[in-house]
Amino acid sequence: MGTAEIIDGKAFAAGLRERIGAAVGGLKAKYGTVPGLAVVLVGEDPASQVYVRNKGKQTLESGMASFEHKLDASTSEETLLKLIADLNADPAVDGILVQLPLPDHIDSQKVLDAIDPEKDVDGFHVVNAGRLATGGDALVPCTPLGCLLLLRDRLGSLSGKHAVVVGRSNIVGKPMAALLLRESCTVTVTHSRTADLPGECRRADILVAAVGRPEMVKGDWIKPGATVIDVGINRVDAPEKGDGKTKLVGDVDFASASDVAGAITPVPGGVGPMTIACLLRNTVEAACRRRGWEMPE
Ligand code: NDP
Image 1 (cartoon, protein in one colour):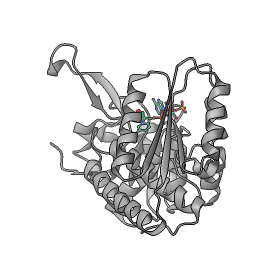
Image 2 (image 1 turned 180 degrees about the vertical axis):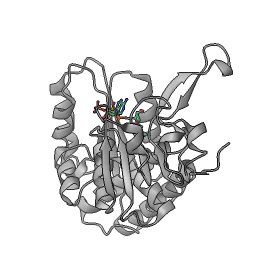
Image 3 (image 1 turned 45 degrees about the horizontal axis):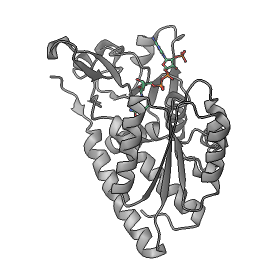
């Protein structure tokens, strides 16, 4: 199906994790200790539990220290803020990640902004968002960073390319646009009020879809030869697999898009695996900066 090259995020992420593991081994040999990542989960959301489990597992596999904090869904904002303060002060913790979404009674941005920006490995703190926007030394949100690494790997220099980002969330769309601008792309950010979304998409040499709408971006929205990065993860019914079965699809209609694009990420196996690999990368970076270690290659 389709003529587009499939961008294998799973394989790329495995290679990245391997390089991170080697870097962590080098840091341990040189400095006698390893970076540590603390992951905080509040409540029992099943998807969040899977993400947190995978983050802890891959942190340990890379040779780093993992600290998991699982709190009851009824945990107060005050208790959570106290935990964040303790983790900020803990010298063994280089990165702090609070798994989103948080329960409704907790102000998520208040919690994210309580994290020491130097330990904010998710890059959601307003200081890191500001540094990214103004060209400073930011810790960059993991999913857009993963997209950028895949794009650089395929295209080399991105300078002068027209990039269209569909979606303007603080987690994906906005930092993605900022990163592409930093790479000297000409960037268009689109959203639910964009007047002619298919027309905007058709101008893209690089199209990044981060919408949360299953298979919304169609093949005839894509410029022939464009590189398409599908961030979407949507669980939909899959009656073809049997009664009650479901499957994951992206925000791009893969079947029609892969006939037109030059290259495309699949779902699953594209952007998804890059996110945790970039989290590990950010943890190493945060540790090196905070502890004054030389950053491994
Ligand atoms: P949000 O819901 O926060 O943002 C979605 C964005 O899409 C909004 O800016 C919204 O516009 C825009 N949008 C919604 N409907 C339309 C439409 N019909 N036309 C144009 N734009 C539209 O989602 P996230 O950014 O958090 O996530 C996006 C997708 O990426 C989801 O599928 C999510 O599961 C996935 N994801 C994957 C990750 C990974 O590791 N691979 C990590 C994070 C997210 P407006 O602002 O106007 O409302």
